[in-house]
Image 1 (cartoon, helix red, strand yellow):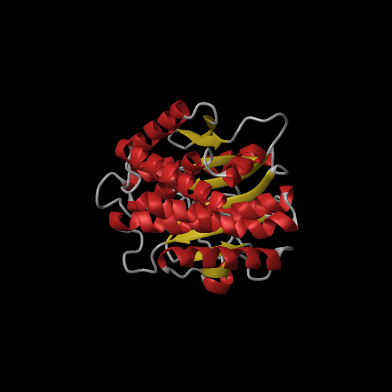
Image 2: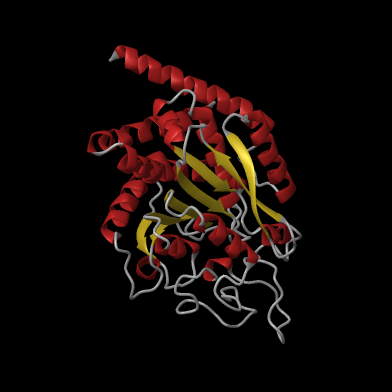
Length: 359
C-alpha cells in the first residue's frame, strides 16, 4: 500500500513538473488568437511526434484549413476513438482554451499514469481546438465583433447578413425547433441541412469511422451545463438513462474540483429546444456517448469570461470530461471490475491537475 502511494506521489510530482515547464513555453491560462493556436498545434505535433499528429479534414468558407490533433499510442489495427471539438461558436473563447488545456494534460500524464497510458493504447483522441475558424478570427477583429457567434458565409440571395449557426446546421432534425430562418439572426440554421463547409467536414470525417467513436464531446459556453441528446422535446435517446447517469457522475466530479455546480439533462429540459446540433447528429450516427459541455459561468460574465477564470474552468471541465472518457473506455475494454476503479483514477488525475496548477 505504501509502495503504491509512493508511486502515485511520484507520478503527481512528474505531472506537476511537466505542467510547469510547458506553461513557461505556452500559457494555457490566457486566450490566444488563431495564429498562435495554429503554431501551438504544430509545436505539439513536433514535441510529441511519437503520439501526436495533425490531420487536415476540411476547409472553411474563407478557405482556411480545418485541422485536428490526433493523439494516441501507435498500436496495430484500427483503434477506438474519442472526439472533442471546441470553438464551433466564435465568441465562446473559453472553449478553445479548454481544448488546448485538455491536450496538454493528457500528454503530460500518459507516461506517468497507468490508466491514461492504457486509454492511449486502446483509443485515439481527436481534438479540434477551433472548428469555426473564420468566425473565431472575426471575433478577434475588434470590440464590435467580439460577440460574433456564427461562421462567415454570406446569406442567401436578398440577405445582406453573414453567417450560419453551425450548431443548428447539422443533419439532425434540421430546421424543426429552436432555429431561425432569418439569416440575420444568431440561430439561423442555414440554407439546408449540412449546407456549411465546417459542418460537412465534421460529418464526412466522422461518418467514415462512426463505428469506431465511443464518445463525442463538443465544448461550448456558457451556463455550466452538461447537455445530452436530443434537442427536440419529443425525441429521446435510446440510452437516455445511461447518458443521465454518466452525466450526473461527471457533474459530481466537476463539483469536487472547485465547487461549481453543473446541471445535467436534455436541452429542452434545462435550457431550450433546438435542432441541428452536432451532439444530436453524433448520437443519431450511433456514437453512444454524446455530450455538450457548457462551461463557466452562469451569466455574470457570460461569453466574456475573464482570463483569471480560465484555469479553474479548465481544471473542473477536465475532470468531468475525463470521467466520461474513462467510462467509455472501461465499458468497451474493461467491464464491471475496472469500471469501479475508473472513479479512483479520475480522482488521482484530478489531483495531478490541481498539483500542477499550484506549482
